[in-house]
Image (cartoon, rainbow, N blue to C red; front, side, top):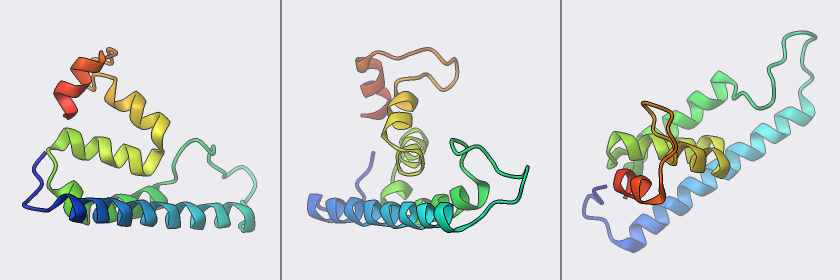
Length: 113
């Protein structure tokens, strides 16, 4: 993963900014779940992200200099972390995306650093 000449402090500040954006989006999503009534027979299961919510988050992540400087595997893993959470992130990075085989810690580190 290239750091594009950024200092540790700059990278930490960008990560903090992304985490704040994700927190803000999660709060907005939770507010909508509480206040928005859903029409009968058209609701999606809560564990499936709704396309308009995911695309907004993906757009913000794609524009981020942190994600923009990553290779495709790390960028996808970061998107999973910021859009789906820690549990799904761990599942993602410890699974071979081509075969579905579980990876050892060493294999995961070889792929993601």
